[in-house]
Length: 83
Image 1 (cartoon, rainbow, N blue to C red):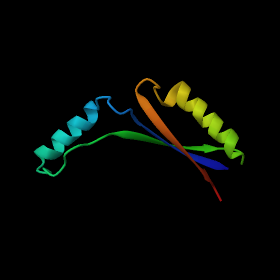
Image 2 (cartoon, rainbow, N blue to C red):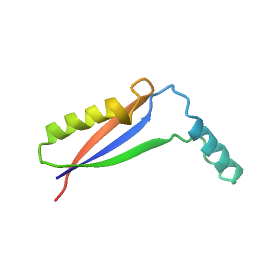
Image 3 (cartoon, helix red, strand yellow):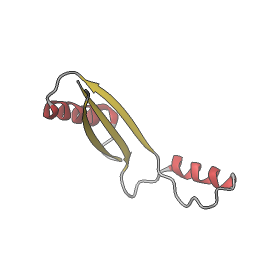
């Protein structure tokens, strides 16, 4: 079995309103050293089989079709072999 870790974040230059609100809240809570916050999503997906290339292709398709918006998101896929 393989596990994929997919990190999805906003592309450079895209405004992150959630990150800005978190930064503002942290500053209000006296965490004044916080100068920027960026929010990302992480998915851990278990895949049957042991063909890493096929798993990566399937995860790429999942990202393109559902998990990420290619207009505003970048994503990174890491394949991990389960023992």
